[in-house]
Length: 172
Image 1: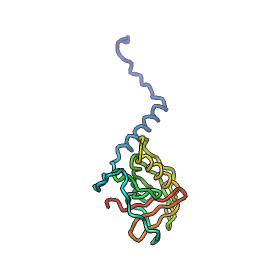
Image 2 (image 1 turned 180 degrees about the horizontal axis):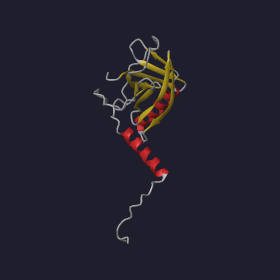
Image 3 (image 1 turned 30 degrees about the horizontal axis):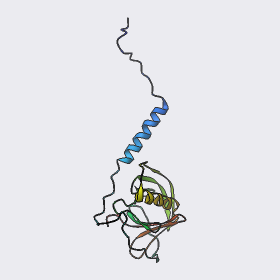
Image 4 (image 1 turned 45 degrees about the vertical axis):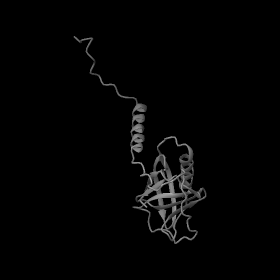
C-alpha cells in the first residue's frame, strides 16, 4: 500500500521552453561575468578625453588580426569615454570585446585588408549618456566595417559605411 504523505518517485520532464530559457540564462550570465576593461589611469575632467588624431595616411593592412587585442580611441571621429573604452580581441575567426558597457562576440572573416563581421551577440545592460552613445556608434561601425588598415603610428583602423574605428594596441 502506498503512503499518501510520501512524495512520488515519478520524474517530471521540464518543458523544452524552460530548458531553452535556462540555457539562454546561463549564456547571458557567462557573458556578464567577462572581465571588465581596466579603467584608464589617465586623469580626465570630462567623460571623453581627446585622442590623438589618426593619420590620414595608411601604411597598409596587417597580415592577420588573429592573436591581437585593441582598445578604441576614436569611434566615428569622436573620442571614447576614457574609463570605458570599447575593445576588440581577435582569434582566428572570432572577435570579442566590450562596447564600453556590454560584452560582445561574433565571427569575422579577414583577407588582405578586407573584413566582414558576422552577427554579433551582446549582453543587454542599458547604457546611458556618453557610454551609451559610444556603444551605439561603435556597434554600427564595427558591424559594417569593410576594410582594415594600419597608420604609420601602428594604430588599427576599421572603416566602412557606418564610420571608422581607430584602435591602439590594448594595454597602451
